[in-house]
Image (cartoon, rainbow, N blue to C red; front, top):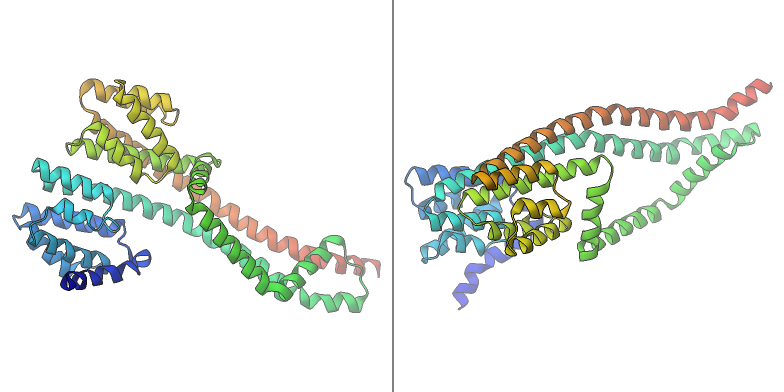
Length: 364
């Protein structure tokens, strides 16, 4: 018994650092792609996992694959061994591996998983690249305003007092804001940190998660991007699950937990209930009001022709291409707007400070 506990200790310890070092989409893509290649080359699952346990770049994934290899060596199945580490391996991967083992098409399933993670990684990188510059400029605007209020404006207070100038209301408010920041910056920082923590804790609750997911679906312009991401993932994953031999109801049940949106999960739950009652997938998707007409019509054609998984892949390709175009357009629009905003804020503060001086010289 003691020996078993000792073997589990490294994994238990790694959970402490999992939030910072959890394998990302790129790591899972590399793992699936290499695993499929080694399986196609005739290398046994156990030998492949042993090799991954020594050579994988990601440390947590490397450690867990060593544990999975140990479970296989004791006679376990691959899907069951992966499921023991579901904090690292996503439900999609575990369930598809199980379907691949049962159907004897594990290499095909791994190739499809690798393609899915590759497309997801490309999309994530594109979104990160598109949002980096706006985030950078927004932070620069905030830091510029803070610097001016705390370190530049206080130098003008003495000048105004020596000249005996009567400050306009706006100028006085700016000076007051600068003095407030300079005097109570630590309290302001603590208050902002406390506010961030309260919001973060609220979003961890069921009510907070629901509110956040709904907000992401209704915020103007940005909601269209998020909705396309969610719909692309829905079509892509459902197509992969169906093409791997999983039937429709279990595939939809799995989708509920991996799309990371409470509103969509509830819509899928309604869809499953109505399919059990004998309705078609296209009919139930249309009834939710969440899915656009194009998806409904493509699903209807797929059900009629028996080619549902391929048509879902095509819809996912369309949404991903459209999403890429939308992101490029958003980036091209936001960059000049943010630059002009930064210039306008700095010019506004400068004019608010200098206008009283200009007015005094005009009176002389």
